[in-house]
Image 1 (tube, rainbow, N blue to C red):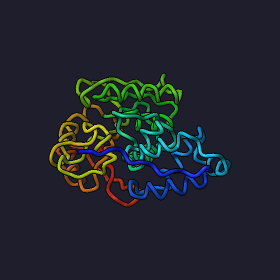
Image 2: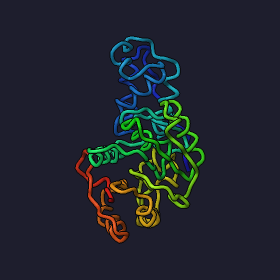
Image 3: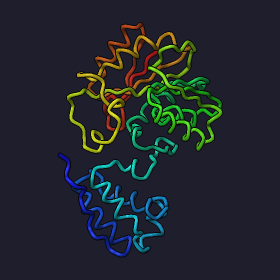
Image 4: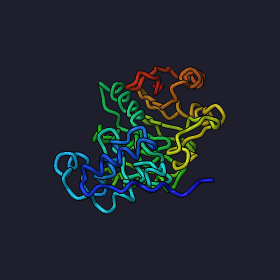
Length: 283
């Protein structure tokens, strides 16, 4: 049974002192307590983190900070509290019911840039688009491209459409409800996908397990259920010279490579900044 939410510490009257106290309190709830405290304080001030650190440390602590801190101490994700998350070169609105973009997924954009060195992709498909994460990041790189984002969640698609409008990409990005690529008959230069890949028995941090949508996280006992469905759909959707780039868990490269190879696709591996296997490029 979940107990009452933790009581945040009484914060000092100045921002600098409140940040120090918040950082100490958050050490028990977060792996990045100072960063979290700064992001919460910036949000409470209505400023960016950069503005906070450069110009606002001597301000009075805003009244909203204590409530924001209490939410984070209860393991609510920072992105849900502030309502946004930076990804690649863009800022995305996010909230409950939507998978929060993560830096590991930027590996897919890096792999796409490496693949399309001679010509830019004109058509892009994002399977499991969530708040538009991969599609909008790719469209930011290739201003002449158009794309389609598919998701099974209407709340996620609502965020995706708002993000496309906020980024002035609504004329280039379409979003529709769907079951992966079922029913699609177009061809795409670039297919991006970050499917669920967590095994149902794998433990997750409370921030993730208690708040983010289970349907965007879990994929059967071995975490491969959605790859088994996606792999047969890819080859008919790929335009000549195109690539499908899939995010994977760092232990899943052999299994997912085998699924893709069985469909007649050549597969290459891309690693994330920590050197772990993170994406497969299928051509």
